Length: 96
Image 1 (spheres, one colour):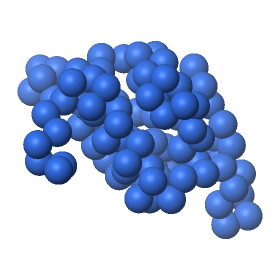
Image 2 (cartoon, one colour; image 1 turned 30 degrees about the horizontal axis):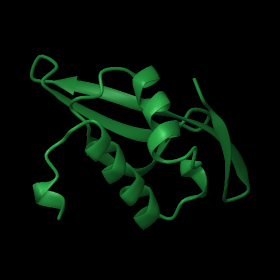
Image 3 (cartoon, helix red, strand yellow; image 1 turned 30 degrees about the vertical axis):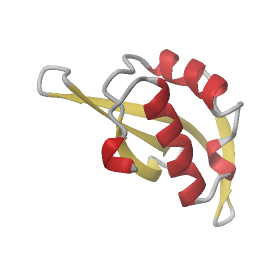
Image 4 (cartoon, helix red, strand yellow; image 1 turned 180 degrees about the vertical axis):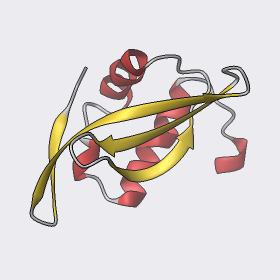
């Protein structure tokens, strides 16, 4: 599992992703979060065809060329998430 550090307000934070499944696993919500301060960063998003954190990290490295989400602006992070949605075959019509 890929983890890292992000500098925010003088504190150093480690990060990872979290997944929440609803409606018996039909919908999967994801978010990036600080695992040392228990604070999320970036948008909460659905990625319904990605089934595990390991799959997410593997796809992130392929699709986003190993971009570090900690260093991205909110807009750039959202664009990276959209690339993930496309990679996993999510319906992109509402985002165009």
